[in-house]
Amino acid sequence: MKNILIIGGTKGIGKALATQLASKHHVFSAQRNLPADPIEGVQYITFDATTGAIDLTQLPDVIHGFVYAPGSINLRPFKGLKQEAFIQDMQLNFFGMIPIIQAILPRLQATDKSSIVLFSTVAVGLGMPFHSSIAAAKGAVEGFARALAAELAPVVRVNVIAPSLTLTPLADKFLNTPEKTEKAAERHPLKSVGKAEDIAAMAAYLLEDQSQWISGQVFHIDGGMSRLQMMHG
Image 1 (cartoon, helix red, strand yellow):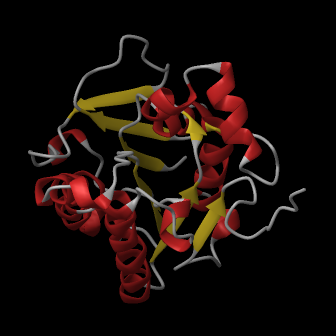
Image 2 (cartoon, helix red, strand yellow):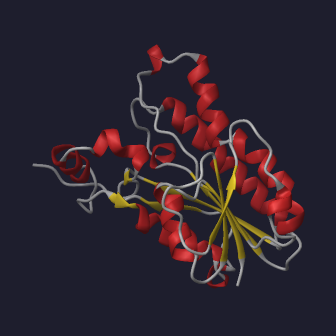
């Protein structure tokens, strides 16, 4: 059994991942608030990714997998965005994970093979209007991941998942009616929006030994949006 640390394992993709892993591994979930419906077998740690340092005393000496799941969807026209919005998105999506990875790095390197999984967005590789702030933050994640993967090889693998719009609490305002969900689905070649379980399944694979020859990659789990062109008319 592996020791897996998930930052943000009580909502959306993080929760789906914790659910998938709990029966096979020791899962530690660190988040701002303890869940009302805890997953059996998951150990919860109170932690705010935007302000604090993680309590290492609550974590094992060896960590085989790390997942940073917090994210934001801040979609607004660039001309109306203040610098503070960019700073907030960078803090949550990028800067917040840096001290955590630095703190747990000795524990990730205490085993002969470990894995880091980070999250980006389809909007980094596919220019999309109103995404300038979040695309900038997640673009930093992708560049960081490739550099870190090179630096930490061969012991620690680092990969990124770049989803499109997914049915999670974070995306609720975009998918909170059947009409909105249908419209979003039509924008994808596979004619559906993602489920948290779809993305979590890829993250789980990247944490397992079956993916031990994969590092420095960005996986587009996005209903075909980033690579397939749809026919119209």
